[in-house]
Length: 115
Image (cartoon, rainbow, N blue to C red):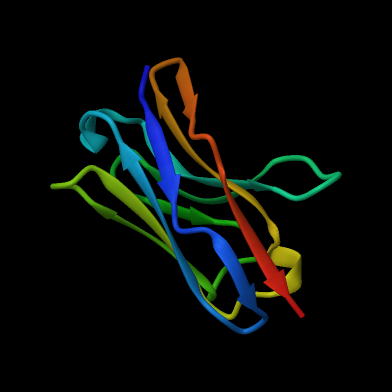
C-alpha cells in the first residue's frame, strides 16, 4: 500500500494562491497514476488534476488555466499549484495514487477560499 501525506492547505482570500504537496512513499515511477481529487461539503469527490503513466496530465475543466500539477521525481513528491482561487474551490483536497489495482488516498487537506 502506498502512503500519501498531503500538506499545504489553509485559508486564503479569493484571487489568492496556495500550493499543496503530496509526499509519496516509494517511487513515483512505479505508479500508474498520481494526482489530486477534492470533495466539497455535500458533493461527490471529483478529480482535479492527474499525472498518468508516461507523464500525461489531465485537468478538470473548472481548474484549467488556474491550477498546475507538477512532480519532483527525486523526492517522490507531487504538487498542486492553485492560483486565482475562487470560493467554489473550497474543499478537502486528497492526494490519490493508483498502481495496478491498488488505489491509495491521503488523509486530505482543507482548502478554504473566502470571498
